Image (cartoon, rainbow, N blue to C red; front, side, top):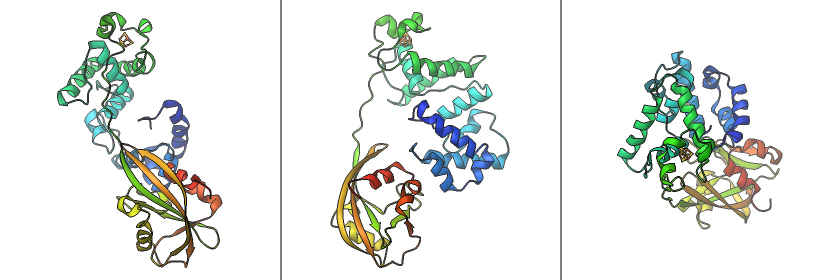
Length: 311
Ligand code: SF4
């Protein structure tokens, strides 16, 4: 939950999650829809799915992994999470390296490159992390490094006079604490054209579909959404009729525009309104009452689409 998300934001989610799924067995047997609903608002839904997959492995195996390799074998657990769990929860001498810790290391020993720059760069950082974790209380050391990066050795204006490492810090000695680590090269976001349509039937209910496996936002309920070539003003209606055979649209009008970023992509969504003529013969339509839309559509893009323009 904490990846790319601040602690204060995560706390209510975490508490709700633990009340719903107090142990791996509870998470393992929960329907995916319930899991995604509990995660709604945190984004990066693959993490919720991986957490459930990992819970299933743990629930079947019946035991927690004893070492970092065991944690890394679980879905969605990488080097950092494995090290954090193994050292903080189980006292294993496992290294950790997140953005905060990398910043501390860069300044402390004067590394003028980032861990992701090239393979050797990552190794230099992980070697340092391993040396710090080789301690009688590796969990405490790792937690201290993370806290130091979060509270003292902060990105802009590090609080060096308050830092317990200031006497041995290379950046501090050389007056380079504001120049290390080097800035990340900005990756330009890829723009993806999209069209979404809010279709109402004669009773004022809205058409919602569940996104198929492998699709963008798989497993989520969403207004009919078309991406890329299918999203152009002159093509989305044909794509709509292929997906919802027999459901004709009338009174189609542009309703607004929505921009939404996920990872390195920026979705530029034209929102349309339309009315359904005929009931259609497609499988699994979910006609949703207007008052239930907010509750039903849990992902933030769907909510933006719902709020776009005038309804
Ligand atoms: S002395 Fe300053 S730059 Fe060095 S680790 Fe401490 S806070 Fe960071």
